[in-house]
Length: 566
Image (cartoon, rainbow, N blue to C red; front, side, top):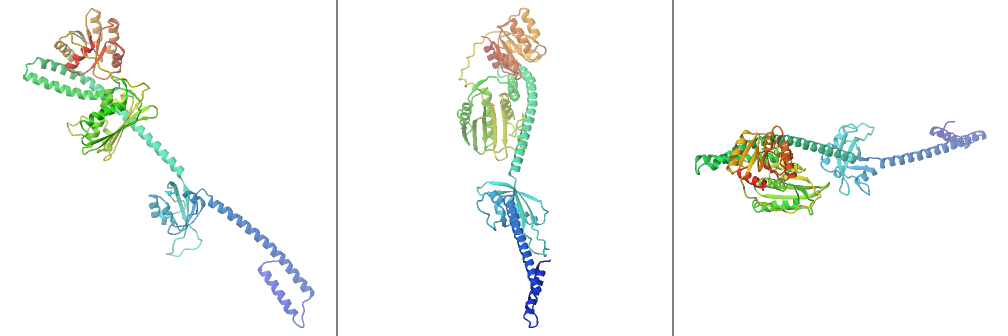
């Protein structure tokens, strides 16, 4: 039997017809008709009750599905929003509320743009209407302003609400359905990758710079050694003729000019040797704070009329092992450069602090003109300078670099035009206590000496012997270590041997042990034109072995001879 509205309507019509017929005088419903109608009504009632049960079950299933949808909506891993055409929030889920850090729901009508941080806010406003036209999946990254003031990295995707109805031309756009994903983890990883890449590039640049400096240092050291021999010969012979020429004569004046030119050339060569420095002359355990204070006091008395000085020194500072003269030169070079960069005045700050892994940091910061990227890239190159002609040699920073490297340290240079310059050098700390100040021994009285001169350079052989004669000493000159040993084995009596370290054959390193085996107490003065680790090591390890660096004046030679021979 069928059921539904039409069937019910038929039953109602039949019942009304029977009732109407029962009132007619000539017609009453038969018992059979009444029973049939009652049966149909009972059947239909049962069917209606069954349909009602099914409808209630459908309602229950729909409530369950709506509950599950609400749970999925509010607990989704992304924030869901419904926005009106102007970008105001009409509805949001719990996830978006949590992303904002709110305990209560977002106020309806709040503009999403007002919850975004710049510059993502401006980009969102400019592109909002485009979300209605772009295909689903088009994303926009930005930052959400949380209630506690922090920012959350987010990614917004959106699409227009589908109504299923055609939109009249010129009508307002429909609502926008937007998803807001928390991408803080992704952004953090991206920033970490960028930081690692920046670090890699920085280390790569440092390595390239170190390799370039190493090559330049080797070149500078080689050139300096050869130039020292030339300058030593010119200066020594010029000094001899200068002292022999009559007072006021043109020869004497000419020799004075030559000597002055040699001294100037020697200063440049010394700068090159400082840049190429690989080893230290005098090593002590130092308190860098004391060294910084000494240099600051010196500068305050001379150049700080227009520049303010600030000291920020950590106490106690770990001691370092180094050459005090070299480190004082480093500080002085950096401070002078800083003062020169502040012609109109400014602030010079000297800082020290202890760093992890037993390192000590010294920082020199100025508020001067700064350097361009191109200038900074060449700042450590020898003879590169931006100062006017005659105001700088371009060896200041290269000498600083060489001295710091020879101490096992690192040098960092950070500068931008108009923002000043920061130079930081880091040195390894020492486990020893700082040395006490010592007083150098007084020079000994000069005496006439019998000197064995060993040098392979023809120019120096002539100038050495003439210089020694001028000082009142008797010189025997030979051109190699092998010849020197032959002279000594043949019975030549000498008070001192002057030994050139860089020669063909045995050289100084091969000659000195053989001479010492033959004459253990013979004083030896090693002459070098460059910093040499073996020569420096010999002067430290052996008694009676001194060192003199070419080129040198006649006074330097006299003082070295006095120290070498008691």
